[in-house]
Image (cartoon, rainbow, N blue to C red; front, side, top):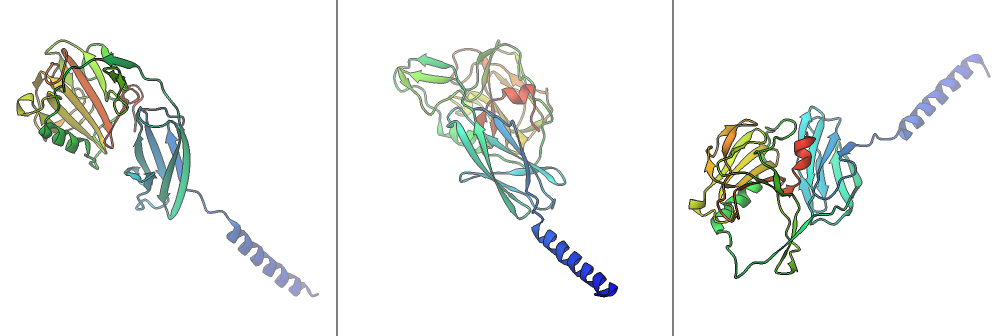
Length: 287
C-alpha cells in the first residue's frame, strides 16, 4: 500500500471514529437542584432549574399540580413547592421539563412531630361569613410575576410566640384530620405595632365591621411570585389596598378582633396558596 493510501485510510478512520463519538456523546441532563435537600413537613422546597435556552421557561409538576417557575437570572429559574403537616411523609415525585428534556426527581420528605391541643366547644360555634371566605380565598390564589421580598423576613411584631405553626387539635375529643395551625401567633398587648415582614403590595384589607367575623381586622400582603402574608385579629389598620409597603413598615396594630380569645397577632405565610412554616423564611431566607 502506498503512502498516499495510508493517509487516505487514516483520514477515513478518523472521520468514522469522530462520527461514532459524536453519536455516542451523552445529551446533557437538565441541571436541577433543590433546597433543602432533606425537607420535612411544612418546609418550602425551592427547585432551581438551569436551562441552555433562556427563553425556554421550565415546567415543574408534582402529581397533577403545576408550580410556576420564575427567572432569577437569564438561564436560571426557581419554583416553590409547599408542604404541610397534612402531607404524607415519604417520596415526592417531581417532574421538571425544559430545553426539550424531562427529568424525574424523587425527593424524600421527612416526617415531623407537631404539638396537639385539646379544646371543647359548645353549639355550632361562630362560622366565617361568605364574604370573608371569598375574599381571603381570592387573596391566597394570587401569583404575581414580580418579586418584592429580599432575603430573610422580619418578625412582624414584638412579643413571644404563643402558638406555633402546625399545631394539631382535638375538638371535643375528636381529632381534626384536616386542621393545622396555619401560621404563628404572637402574644402582645393591644396597640402593639405590626410591621410588614417583607416588601410587597397590600392586596387585602378586610374589617370586622365589613363581615370578617372570624379573621377580624385583616391585612394581606402580596410579596410576589406566590408568596403572601396575612395578618389577622388586628386592632388598627394603617394601610390601604393597592399600597406598596417596605419591609419593616407599620401596617397596623395588634388586637383581638374576630374569633380571638385575647390580644395577639396571627401571621400566616402562604406559598402558592398553601400555608407553610414561616420559620425558615425568617431565619434562613429563601431566594
